[in-house]
Image (cartoon, rainbow, N blue to C red; front, side):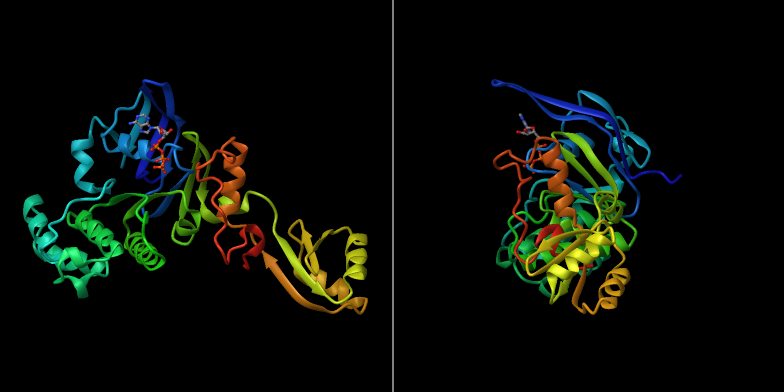
Length: 329
Ligand SMILES: Nc1ncnc2c1ncn2[C@@H]1O[C@H](COP(=O)(O)OP(=O)(O)OP(=O)(O)O)[C@@H](O)[C@H]1O
C-alpha cells in the first residue's frame, strides 16, 4: 500500500480558557492519500484549522499520532518540512514591489533557485501580471501569489486553509483551477473549506468532520454514492395516470412540481418503456444525483451540528444548485 500523505490516529485537542474547556478535535483519524486534491470539510468551528495547526507543529496535540509521508510529526517535522508548503495565514509581501520581485526576494531567502520564480508564476496563472506592483493586485491575485510563494520550494504536500475566503467568484475559480493543476501535476493538495460547492468540483477525495470528529471519508463519488439513492424526474402530460401506473409496477413515486419523482435508483429506460406501453409519452426524463452539499448537510445535521447558528452547516444551497434535487448527472 502506498504511503499516505497525511495520517492521524486518535488525534485530540482541547482548549482551556476562562470559560472552561472546549474540545476542538476528538479521536480524529484522518487519511489523505498521496497525489491529488483532498477536501477537508466541516462547518465553522469543527476543528479544521486546529487539525492543520497540529500537523504543522503550531499547536500541540493532547493525544493521538500524526504522520506526514510516513514520518511521525511533530517529532520528525524537520525532516519533512521541506516537502510541505502551507498557507494558514496571509503571508506578508512588500506592497510597492512587483509580485515577481517579492518572489525573487523570498526565493533568495529560502534558497530556492531563481528560475523557480518564473515557473511558479506560470503555475498560478500570474505570469502576465508578474511585473505589476503587489498593492494593485486583486484579492484573488494576492492569494495566488501566496500559493506561488509556497510552491517555490517544490513541495509534495500543499496545505491550504480556507484559501478562497473573501474572494469573489472569479477569484474562487482561479484558486480552484490552480489547485486542480497542482493535483494533476502529482502534488497532494489538502484544502479545508466549509463551502462544499467550491471543493466538490476540484477534490478527488474528501474527509468530512463535525465537532472535531470524522463523519465520512473517501473518493467524492463514493461519499456521495454511499448515501442515499438516485432519483429520476419524469415529465408527462397525464401525471395521475403515470403515477398510478408506476406505483402499480412497484416503483417509489412521488409528486415533484408539475411532474413526478421516482426514487430508489430506477432504470430510466424501464420508466419510459412502462409509460410508453400505455400511451403515456415522457417529455422530460432527468436522472438527479445527490451532491456533496446535501450529503454534508445530512451528516452534520446527524451529528447535531445542523442547527448551530453560524456553524456553517446550514449554508444555503447556492442559487442555481438546488441541492440533491437540482443536479443533473
Ligand atoms: N486558540 C483557541 N483557544 C480556544 N478555543 C479555540 C482556539 N482555537 C480554536 N478554538 C475553538 O476550537 C474549535 C475548533 O476551531 P477551529 O478553528 O479549529 O475550527 P475550524 O473548523 O477551522 O473553523 P473555521 O472554519 O471557522 O476556521 C472552535 O470551537 C473554536 O472556537
